Image (cartoon, rainbow, N blue to C red; front, side, top):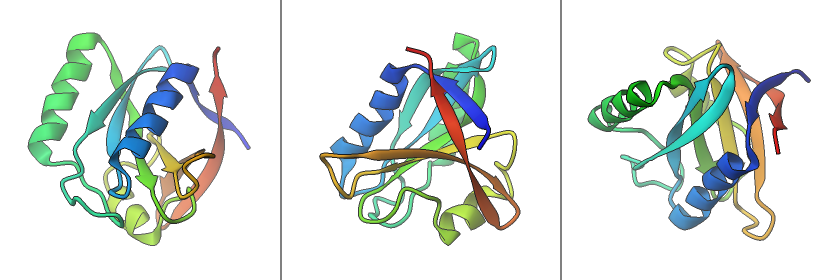
Length: 139
């Protein structure tokens, strides 16, 4: 598997903590990068307020994009949680994300079905498929 994302442990932990805090509702957010390294986690509110689906309200997405731009970050991708299923994009996730956010964007899925042992995996979405990759922790 190829490394598609580089980030600090604190950013990975921020995604996990967001997922645990929001459970049983799926959490979601956006990731900002600079020079190819994810440097910021931008938590968002799940507009669906659902344990099975997520979406980010368009106004909130624009607000986060403005924050990213002000911080000198580019959009690296997105993250969301699965609270009762495997840490991989569901068919619904793929249908929702593929048309707008295929490569080069990455998609982290945080599995918190076992709250004591969260699982974090990263994917790219191409067409109707999700491809798992590796991420590199920088510290």
